[in-house]
Image (cartoon, rainbow, N blue to C red; front, side, top):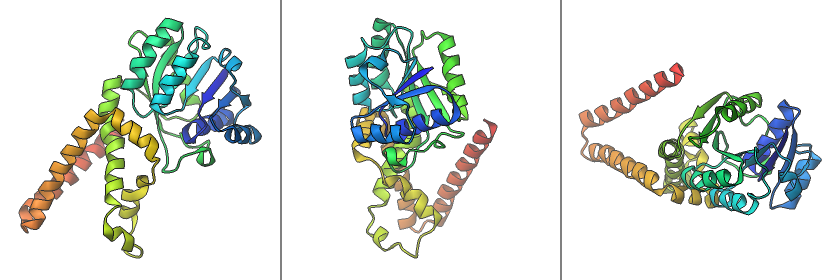
Length: 282
């Protein structure tokens, strides 16, 4: 199979490396930064550059770009994507991408399936890409309701073959609603948390909890601003809910209300226990 990967940053670069590690597929890569393409070829992460003519020969095209860039690429290259090709994106937001991509795919005869690999680190760029990034991770697929089930079976086989641990099917709306909590809110919280004046004096006074809370504050602000604003309805709802819950803790602490504070902490502990049970049941 010929696979084209557009965008050789952390996700696209890691996908290229893991496909090369686990399969015999031919991988072509494309990036705005030509030195990245040359480096990827030098270290055998790709077999060659994904030129316009090679787009036409790809069986699978993976778009590892920002949401707006993903839609722009599809609009500019839809005529080059041959009928029958499967196109998967890797964006952290699905409604604006799928709403544009599904009609384009239908009109030009290729198949578009929204995708979101649930893996990453706090750094970005090809230099941090690694072939083990997706080991055991969940791959979310967001298909058009009219998609051929054989396409989903093919994608399931492919992603499991390169190290993903599970495949999750979702709709654009469900994906964006849940991801606002599981990913985007965590990044907002980490960014706000690390801005405390106390953070500057943390050395020698911090351990695992501080590292856990601040890890994703090292983010790509350009990408995350786009993701946040594209999902502003669901994310704003989650931020507002968090502020409301934090206010309850502040009220109990300020009033020295031990029973209320204990109740809040107990509720959090019990909720985490329920989450743990659900995760074990999967």
